[in-house]
Amino acid sequence: MRMSKTFGKTLREVPAEADTINHQLLLRAGMIHQVAAGVYSYLPLAWRVLKKIENIIRDEMNKAGGQELMMPVLQPLELWQETGRDLAFGKGLFTLSDRRDRKLALGPTHEEVITEMVSHNVQSYRDLPLLLYQIQTKFRDEPRPRAGLMRVREFTMKDLYSFDTDEEGLNQSYNQMLQAYQNIYSRCGLPALLVEADSGAIGGKDSHEFMVIAESGEDEVIYCPGCQYTANTDKAQSIKNKIEDGEPLPLEEVPTPGAATIEQLSDFLKVSQNRTLKAVFYIADEELIFVVIRGDLEVNEVKLKNILHCFELRLATETEVIGAGIVAGAASPVGISGIKVIADDSITSGANFVAGANKPDTHFRNANYPRDFRADLVVDIARARAGEGCPKCSSKLSSTHGIEVGHVFKLGTFISEKLGASFTDANGVSHPIVMGSYGIGLGRLLAAAIEQSHDDKGIIWPMPIAPYHIYLCPLYQESSRVSEVAESLYVELEAEGLEVLFDDRKESPGVKFNDADLLGIPIRVTVSPRTLKKDSVEIKRRSEKEPELVPLEGITERLKELVRQGLSRLPNSV
Ligand SMILES: [Zn+2]
Image (tube, rainbow, N blue to C red):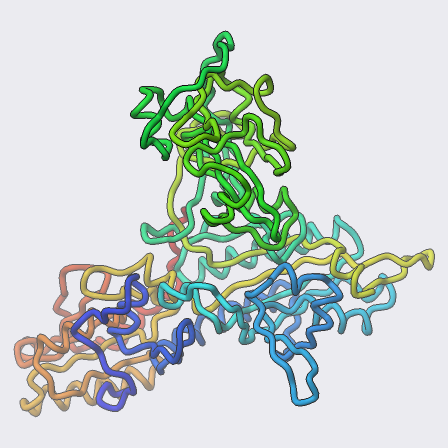
């Protein structure tokens, strides 16, 4: 492709609206264009990357026994109401009405549609197992679309669904998919880590995510250097740091003027934060919930939501808290009634905590559970942190940042039961089909590749998903020899099946080199009067600092070999 004809312009300046690396570089490289919040067009260079990712995914799905099909974006809302997942997705589900006032949804995922279809096509155990997939557009009404292609409202996803006769079959399908996913990331040049995850609105039992490790990743991953335990923070468990028990002392009211936060309180009373009790208020489907947790810990809202079995969970506003007769800043579990109290199990170790007294500027010293207050439920609702104990082997946990690039679920039978998808076994007895669901967002994978592999000059594409293999860069084309050599090299390389972006623009060397670095094509080939004096061209790999002078003779073979190496080299494992 000739650069002079490529649709899309590179930008020198970082666009103001872009706050993440992938967003900045994709805009600067002229690869995406924002249409609305969280809605993007892909320009030709980005589209080539997406197509390569798509081909790798399709190939691995087919190898694993998947059958590709295509389902509609428009789905009857009734199907969602039958499984109850319209409520689980809540406002994230885009809904609309047609001209006859029938309610429809734009699919954020396709479990309902595919299960309804499978129920008409599977009768007997002989029809199973099945692995069915599509690569298609999805919609989710994100509350805060941001971070370029990370959090968008319309995106392309590969979604595969497995249908088995029993748990054992599901485990086999699940493991097959885990392997296929590892192959996909590896072939894309993006090593990914398998982590335990929460199943969220999708539902089901076991769930795993694949994470690409990147500084800028918005997900925190907790892992144990001692064993293989790895989980995202929504799901991660830990052994909390214990604090010493003591003899319970009598409850004592103390004035604490102006000390409303845990930090202020701990400074004012000269007690460490882990000797205080923090009160946090939530609204769970309209109900006010009082959460008590040790002052040094944070509430994990995903764990809390799972325990409450609610559809919507949010922090209560100050007005809602005051409306319930609670003194904000000095809220107390002591003497509370008429409100559901959920306590983190951290409050059961240690004694003599500082807690609110439910009077302005007043707290209690020596609050002890269960002597001074009760909770409706005492469970683990804390965010696990690095430095705490591994739940499997008690070694110290560590943490890192990652970007989710795939999510798989063991759904079990809750959807097939609700939609009547069943099969008869060899004895003629009917059972619900056992399901799994497996998704990869293509744009997210592209964005993750950039977040993981870039420098201050631009993108550094892994060869397998790079928009082109070679950036052919003639300098000072007014020299007819440069122009001739570059033109004939371009034709020859393309004829050999190499993908070449030919920078035939009449621009200065500085502009061309900057664009080459920004676009991140793996191999730059420079032809200039200086290199031709030695009958050579200059080859520079994007991932390396120094260029290399290479004789023109045999150059095509040399470049073919470099591209071949780049395509076959698997990334180091993580
Ligand atoms: Zn461990």
